[in-house]
Amino acid sequence: MAIIPKGTWVEIEQVVLQPSERSASLPEDTRHVPYILRVSGFLLQEAELEQQVRIKTIIGRELEGTLKKINPQYTHNFGQLVPELLTIGTEAEND
Amino acid sequence: MTDRDISYAAVMARKNEIMKSSMGIDYNEYIWSPVAFDYEHLMNDTGYDIDEVFRIQRETKVGNTPLYELKNFTEAVRSFSPPGKGATILVKDEAANASGSFKARRASISAYEAARKGYAGIIAATSGNYGAAVASQAAQRKLKCIIVQEVFDSHLVGQPEIVEKGRSCEAYGAEVLRLSVGPELFYMLLRTLEETGFFNASLYTPFGIRGVESLGVEIAQQTRQKYGKDPDAVIITHAGGGNLTGTARGLRYAGCTHTRIVACSVDLHGLHMASDHDFNRKSFTTGHTGFGVPFATWPDRVDVPRNAARSLRYMDEYQLVSQGEVFYITELLTKLEGLERGPAGNISLTAAVTLAREMDKDQVVVVQETEYTGAGKHQNSQLAFARENGILVYRGDPEENVPGKTIVIPEKLEQVRGKVQDIDRLRLEYLNNAARVYPRENWSAQDVAFLAADVNRDSQWIEDRFLKR
Image (cartoon, rainbow over all chains, first blue to last red; front, side, top):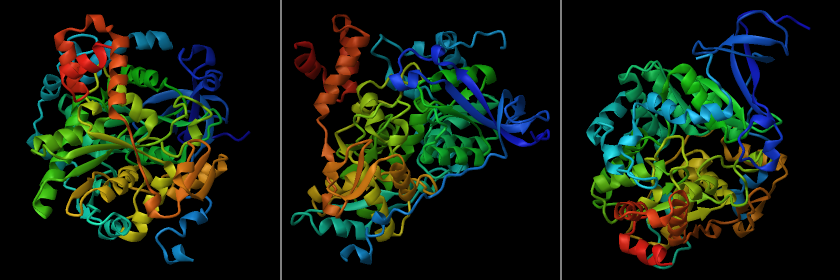
């Protein structure tokens, strides 16, 4: 697997709480899954994906976790067009 | 720090000491009993009066937002209102605040206080616009910032609206801790406060509420200036209660004693807020009944010992609207008024339709917020995401909206009909919750007086409607 250089902006994952360690008052579906954290920062030593690594966050905190993503990007968007919106407050309203 | 036990139980057990050192407020000074405390004293001890709040907010691009008359929108509502009805609808364009929502007001005083007290940074646990607000205020006050956010389900699928809010926090230089679904967000907040020694910019501190009071004062001043009178009604989106409490207190401070305070939320009944499965089957991540009802009927379910946001104290009416209605209104606002704003900020505008059509034509109703919009937040993003998650989206009768199953977008404006809630039922639910925390046999006259004020009634009402039954 490719070596990711030190200093790369990455995303790590921590399992904060295993299912057995979670709050007692949870609905059934939530109770059976771990409590997961994802956070981004600069990689402090070269590593491969899925390795345990340390990062320095944007405010300078050092955190540890499993390396999951390189240069994580925002992928949220406006979604597939929803045609139902086109006929609100427009000429097409009366068609 | 490293030798501390960070298990769930151990951290939760240190809650009080962590809270005390992260805010500099000793709530014990104000607490009278398990159900009552010296609310006004707590609010006044922030040390900031309204002039000071305005001064602080001007320093960091908060407040003084425009109050617009929605002429075309009002005309559209009047077209189906009974003769002589159809109040003028005004909107306070809170999207004009730094970070794009009224939450900048809520964050501004906390950030100022944190800087003044010499904290190196500031933390907030929020999946809402409040995160970006704290991050933006922190940037201006040269504070480090961490936002603790519930954003994805166990398959790492993020609610697009929250993903966008996380992006915005990072844009302002904050570290964002992205978490899966669960109430353990509070545990993570405590752990991070303890690890960093940062200031806790909880949504529910007196600083947060004080910051929103300026919104009420501005609405009073601007309405008087343009229309020569007080607003007849102000509609406020209600979730945790801070927006309503702060705005209503500001209106009262400005002398608007006859203004109706109308709360509104999106109806999400039947969806469990801590459910991994339900998480991505709702389009609104705030301003909904999953927060609005529990926070109204028991405000102290929060991340501070006593909540400074106490909505039933100020609420005259409470209206529920559906997801489909809010998306419709958001689209209509864009097309009729040339204002593209986020759906969550338009919940109160949706309720305004129901209110204005029944109010006299010469009356004025103020919708007290808007929020910014964009990828993730936009109604198209939300509806497309809902479809991907198996929600049935169609145009039709909004009565057919079923949270988590259907989103029915009205076919015409007159179908937008908010559902007025029975406030007395909420008041009695609040009292039941209080009795669960502290059995009613133990209530002193002081407790009863506090609870009466908290539900906007007198002690006799509590006696007749609750204690005698």
